Each structure stands twice: as structure tokens, then as C-alpha cells.
Image (cartoon, rainbow, N blue to C red; front, side, top):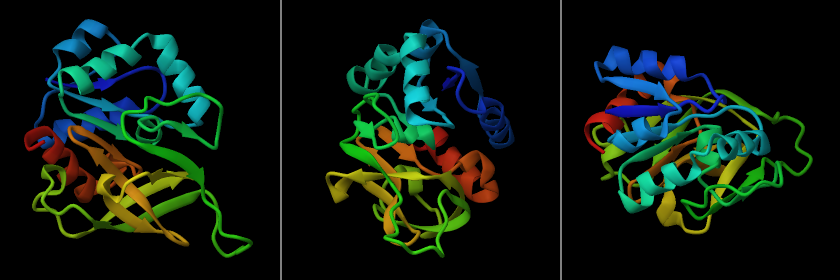
Length: 205
């Protein structure tokens, strides 16, 4: 069973609909017992870092998520804000993240270049950096995904950068550490490219 964590931040229905198209059973839940029984988890999220972490902490699901990912070593995928929350912290706020992957979130800084707007919004191309990873297996090396974000992950190690994108400068579009993944883009809004990636998460990771 695949579970999407419903903690009041993020449009879980669009993710559920994408899995329906793929033919993969998925539920949206905030129940610890259902999350514990699930084989794979998705942590969605939109909005600000502090608001997301405050909601997640209030839900009482932080330890359940960490147990799933670290102790049980089951797959976890963070999407957009959900990816940023997998890191330690963000320049956007004061809350601490889940610290599941060693990175911090930084705001885009173009040093006075007015031609590039923040947030980074719309379709953009990514390059796969870890080509043998099951999440990206058999995907085209150049993928197109839909982005909406002002902050991006800066990983301690290049080993944790699964995909790169370029917006003013290269940044981590997707990250991973063992069974834990994060996608800065919205696969549920990325048509065939997002569907292929979510199908890999469901069937291959």
C-alpha cells in the first residue's frame, strides 16, 4: 500500500488522481496506524517552510515518518515543500526540518540580475545525475517538470543530488539518500514525465 500523508498542507487529491491513472492503489491519510502499515510514503507540501513544519509537528506524525524511513527503511518521497522539509533547515524560516538528508534550503540569489524572477515557476528541464537509481530507471535523461519555488536544496554532498536543473545557476531538482527521495518539482502536475517518475516510485523503488 502506498500512502500520501495528509497533514493539511498540499493538494493530495491530484497525487491520488495520478496514481489512479497509473493503476497503483494509494490512500491519503493522517492516521499513524495506516502510515505504519504502508509500504511507501509520499510527503507532499506547498507554502512556507515554517508553516509546513508546524503543521507536521502538530500532526504528531514526525516520529512515524522517521520510523518508516530510518528504522523500517521503507521508501519515502517528499514533493516540493515536502522535499525541503527532508533537510535540516531553510532560510525561509526558523523551524528545524526532518534532517533525513543532509542539506539546507537557500533562497535563489541572482546577485542583482533582474532578468530572472523569484519564484522559479513553470516548466523546466532536469538532468539525471545518478542514472542507475531505480526512481529514474528508463526515464529520458532530460526530463521536463513543473516547478513553483523560491528556495532550493544545497546538499552537503553531490552524492545526494539525483537530478539537477539550471535557473540562473545549477541547483538540486531532486535528492536522495538510500531509500529517501525528494523532488523539488511537482510530478503530479508534470503530465507524462511526472507519471513515469511516480510509476517508478510505486513499482521499482
